[in-house]
Image (cartoon, rainbow, N blue to C red; front, side, top):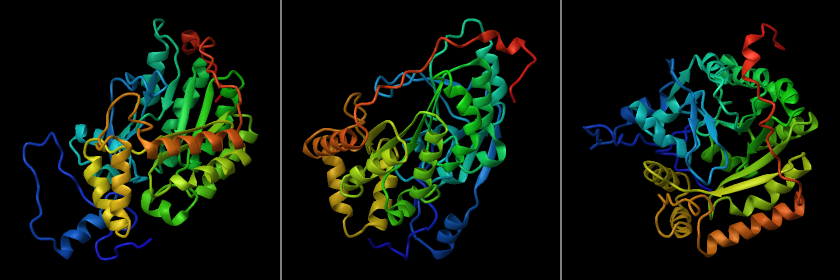
Amino acid sequence: MEENQNNYFKGRGAQVNTNNRFDKFKLVTEHIEGLDEALMSNQKTEFIYTHPKTIINKIESPDVGMAYSLNPYQGCEHGCIYCYARNTHEYWGYSAGMEFEQKIIIKQNVKETLEKQFSNKNWKAMPIMLSGNTDCYQPIERKLKITRGILETCLKYEHPVGVITKNTLVTRDIDIMQELAKQNLVHVMISITGLDEDTRLLLEPRTATYKGRLAAIKKISEAGIPVGVMVAPIIPGLNNHEIPNVIEQAALNGASNAGYTIVRLNGAIGEIFHDWLFKAYPDRANKIWNQICECHGGDVKDSRFGTRMHGEGKIAQSIQQLFILSKRKHIGHLPKFNFNCDAFDYRAGDSQLSLF
């Protein structure tokens, strides 16, 4: 792989700031100057604090597999170029491009708001996904511990919770998840897109190493916590050949389940990804782009329920078959994990006792 050193900003995923579709005016650059490039590449991460009134989101999409999601952070410093959550940053008045990685919105009152929701006698317990949007264990979580507070609250009320992350910081909270696991109240998925570190540094510049993520799977599994691997997204022509090795290594480290999705580039992500692709992989960009298009009936912004996640056509079918065979070989047919929704007790907030 060759990296275009002249106009590639290292340490960031997006290489541009796309226009916000909600803005009345658009910012355009007619002449690219070195000064402008330096300002964009060196901009430090900014943290913006909010106090939302509600923090649980009902998932309406029929192909996600969870009832609710909870996102303590909006925007993500990991900088994954393909992230579908980039589009949501436009609702906050920011770009889905570089600003998604540089302007992180922090919900400060999550634990208190969640406890208020759980203590409502009309609340019906259903699994909540952390995070359905941006990574709940992105770097700032090490300092703020908002996600840890969410897990503590779920344990207090015995509420089911799912976790998906690509950060090894998740192992910090094994003590809480062990207690949740005793009642089938937690399941963890670690996202691993491949095993090639050179690819990761371009695709997911500020994430944990693949080796670190495999070690996290092992540590979580050894603690008795159900854990699987999410091979996502699969980008045909770039990392689809990695599927067997990822599943094999994850299984060797204790993964008891596996899932996958094929990349789709909805909203502003198509423009962001296209720009990145031709800068990061100029030698094979056309081939990768055309294969992504083929997987989605010619439309990279495919939003059709049922096909948007796994694609269609011959390339998508070959990816699906490779995944199924790899999962069958290395993980087998283990029983599907089922969350326990019966232990929940909205009256737990009445007690002054706490495990932590």
